[in-house]
Amino acid sequence: MPETTEESELHNGHQPQAEPEPESKAESQPESKTEPGPENKPEEALKLEPVVTGADPNTKEEDKESSIQSNDAATPSSTDQNARPQLRKDEGNRTFTMRELLTEFKSDEEEVGSPYSRESTQRQSNQNSAAMELVSSVTGADEEGQSRQRVLVYAAKRYAAALEKNPEDYDALYNWALVLQESADNVSPDSTSPSKDDLLEEACKKYDDATRLCPTLHDAFYNWAIAISDRAKMRGRTKEAEELWEQATKNYEKAVQLNWNSPQALNNWGLALQELSAIVSAREKQKIVKTAISKFREAIRLQFDFHRAIYNLGTVLYALAEDSVQTGTTNPKEMSSNELYSQSAIYIAAAHALKPNYSVYSSALKLVHSMLPLPHLKDGYLTAPPFGNTFPPHSDWKRTEFFLNQEALQQVIKVEQKQVSRSLSGRIVDAGNTDKKAIRVDIPDIISVSASADLTLPPGAGLCINTTSGQVFLVADSWESLDGWLDALRLVYTIYARGKTDVLAGIIAT
Image (cartoon, rainbow, N blue to C red; front, side, top):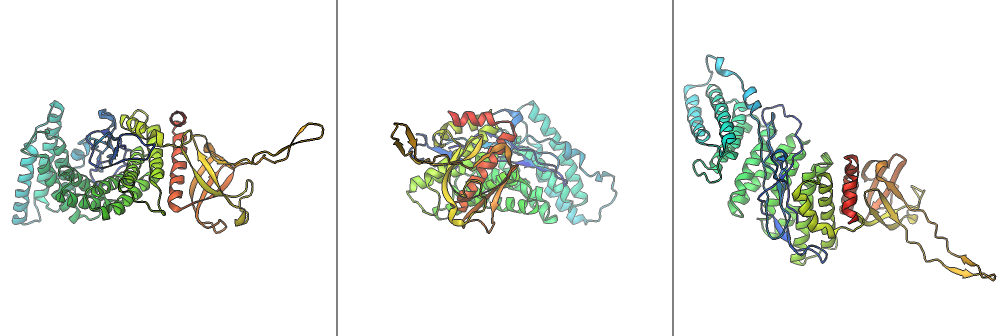
């Protein structure tokens, strides 16, 4: 199945700026689950992997979006994964600018004295020396990398000087951690001294120190989690990797607690959980996967066109379907494997419609296209009132079929077979009344969609569609089913609002 996309952004400084939407780059995908699909699924088994927020699924440098969040600049990081024929993880590479590292630095050079003891400043000096040695020994792979590393070394010296004067300067600690993390990305793939892991480990120590001094520094928790995730990826499916992924998820959780309005942090949290689920025991796996699904969904609901999280949600659902098929286990209270495959295809199709030029999404769509209920994007059952009567008695509500495409949500009315009779004159007379009107909600007319707890609705998972013509109330079969309808309606409207309706129409028409 499709790989997933992850998002990492370097957050510099304290006043975080709006986090750019990440774009993912198709690279070595972090291992994820591979699972077989239903009868209509592609012959090849796909592997769902997290797509780093901030990377371009295509290998274009300008599309990198996984970024270590820095209050000053965002830097992408990426990772992809391949298994058997599968959809690659859409992850990104960090492209971090040092503007903030240099301009935000406090000019402590003018200070004459320091209130800290000689012993504490000496201890800090020793720690600084070890970190400086690591940064100074990094050589870029090319001329651009070498130039960038010179800037990083200069910044590191400034932060070291600041810390010698004030060991409790958490700004300097945090920014120095960013320098170490950026230097790790600048290390040649075959370098062993220093190794990328050495630099990331040192960066983690700086983030730890910074957050102890300032426990509300959410950007530090976010970037720290990215550094831990990068270290975990180097360790495969080992116990050490499991411990690192667990630590990364805790730091993402802390970052979200401190800054709830961060779709990138939610997306990466979901990715870390997805990676962790591939290592833990089968008993723990399902719970972790469901938590990952909820994080991707939360990210999408904060930013409806966040294609990386949309794609990642598709991959994790695909993996869940694969697991269901492989184990042969079914839970009547949950979606079947075929329903999971179909739902997965909806998110992959939506991600492709939003970013049709991304090769990762295009490849993934080819694998899941046949799982869509063509020529529709989604179909299923909803309980609906009679046409034109919003709040009739509960006994008048009927469970009927609906389908969703690029134009509308449409109720399907099963027309009764016409009963015909021949009059004495030989003229055919229609004895059945088949002129029944169906509920139809045109996509451009939608204002909002939401779950509804209106007490006048029949028992179940209520759905409210607010349109320019008024409200339409329906009831889904379950709350899980409702999530699928809500997401599908929001995605189709977002695709329409972004002017990509023709792309979606082309997907479901073929």
